[in-house]
Length: 144
Image 1: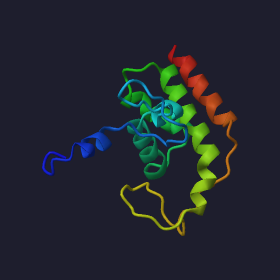
Image 2 (image 1 turned 90 degrees about the horizontal axis):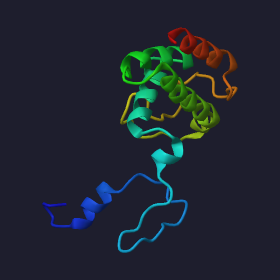
Image 3 (image 1 turned 90 degrees about the vertical axis):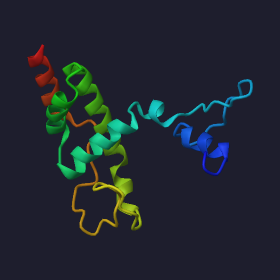
């Protein structure tokens, strides 16, 4: 933006991620989005990147992801990590079937959408994950 002297580029690059499905709320001179992706999802894009890597590259399910993230997020309590992992897997299971209809795409990450020819993973899940979430709850109880 500085090289070309186009301040609008800095504005675009600094804009918060949003689906823009709801109209903006006008406040004085700076419009504010009424729908922000991270707020709506309840997780940050940095967290999503970590979840995506653990899920696709390391093939983690809810329990193994919880165990790995306990070490990564040592600043959080086990209960907080459990809430984050459960939230991810609920949304993952609700939306996983949509990944099976994507056309070939650009591969920017190891876990990016692909044409699914070699993706033999399950795509319909019980969104409650009863057994896995019960195991996570027991692990949280043991940690106190």
